[in-house]
Length: 231
Image 1 (cartoon, rainbow, N blue to C red):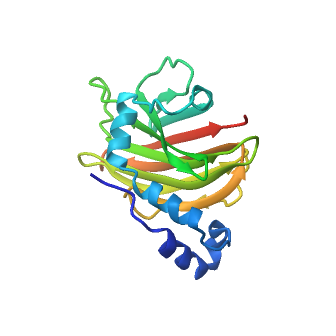
Image 2 (spheres, rainbow, N blue to C red; image 1 turned 90 degrees about the vertical axis):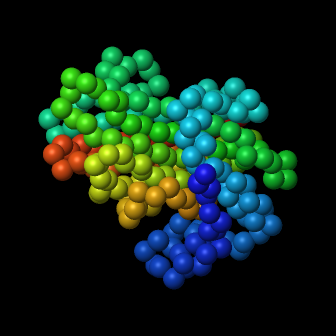
Image 3 (cartoon, one colour; image 1 turned 60 degrees about the vertical axis):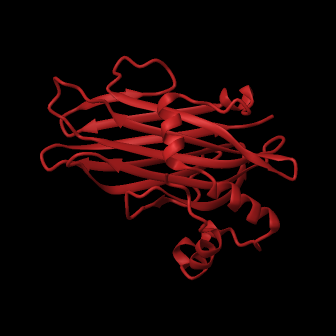
């Protein structure tokens, strides 16, 4: 069981010492709301959420209007050719497997806090030379407010290679209302991790891209999670 660690105060302190990533801290004093959010985020069991995403489990406390605005995408590109592509529309090349889960974490001062977890991984195909194995995961935690002032609170991500596969050249992009405000973030390890990322808007998305190789074959995997809320 892998839970998100309680890293908010430590993470914010470290950010203040690193000018190049100071923008992610969004400079505001830690409040009681922040501490409650940290407790809710720390309760996320990533292994369980990944299992729920694989099995298509959706929390029945999540309103339909939120589920209807969720979008996920996944790609796996090999050195030789594109062997898979998926979006929320039916795909004719189903060699990439994707899924998601969404749950209500709780409420803070009457505001609902949600998390979404999406994954992508190449399917095992007997007649293909590529045997690369990796599961890419990305997730969002947000507060659903009325109108366009929804609050993105946290982003989490990670990679789980299998067999001889190894991951490198990891990239994370976060978009607020279709705008990338902070450029590309370069995670240093495969480990599932999260960080606080406070922004307001009506559309939030996060995507990761990474190279994967087993020493013989090489590919690139991408997964995107997006939620659009305007109610």
